[in-house]
Length: 390
Ligand code: SF4
Image 1 (cartoon, protein in one colour):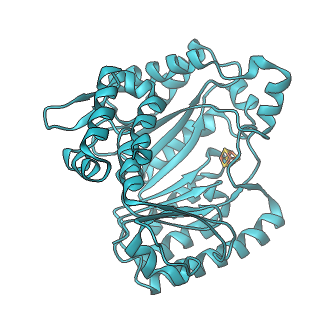
Image 2: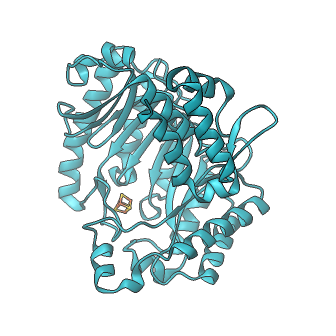
């Protein structure tokens, strides 16, 4: 039963300098025309999956982008259409502060959204300008208050390692965001993606390159500030007030199937689920334990597909599970042992223990330590390497 649904809206008002996501910068009539046609195709896909019975068990929905709120009143219509096919307990819309006004907040809440995820990134004007964000810090803080006022769960995304960012400016951003009291905060280190304006500027001016040491400090500072303010870290980048963790993202990190609709949307299905929906996903049978795919066009006729064996699927589950503070359950380790062999799994676990990346908890779960949290790629690599063991 598919429990998570992702819908992609590939439009923004303007392109941020660091962004390599699939999102076109559009405004005015161009946005109206292109968005209307795109939405028509997306709704047709949604209905097709609904009619095929694939949406009945959906418990979490995430409308991401891009900037879904550039759709204006059409976004609430999309939320209502989703709710005509399923009864999710969590329905998140991503938003940027400049397009999350009073009318949008009220319309989303009324249509049945439960959560808004705001791209705040920083509260420093110079840093916002350096990365090409088109909103102000005041707009971001007002958006948090607006979301809370209409009863939505509010999440804020923050970024560290921005051009010109310092320890002091990061502390000011953290303090400002904590003061606005969102329910959830995600903290990401900036990476320079090839071909983006910021990467090109950094080629000419290396001072713009993110400083890894400063980013590690910022991540640790965020952790201590947010924990002191009552947020709980539950994933490497995610903090939530008790009861406000993002169930949709947890589905991604715990190996649950999810359906992705819209151009560039990714999905992951177990073989049986894929085969049942094959007619809507390119027609080929799974031929593997798990299928990952990315939709490559608006209409849903072209896909990039990756097939994972049972061993690769379990290695992936271990790797993703290590992103979570609670780590992985003994049952998952048992499944890994039966597929990869006891010796391989125990050797990987022993290696991770000896490097101080993980520790056993009282319930027999294997969970990342603070060191494993900071050196995530080392830990994920050890788990993923199990997929290639003989
Ligand atoms: S708002 Fe988000 S998706 Fe749009 S350009 Fe900026 S970072 Fe990319």
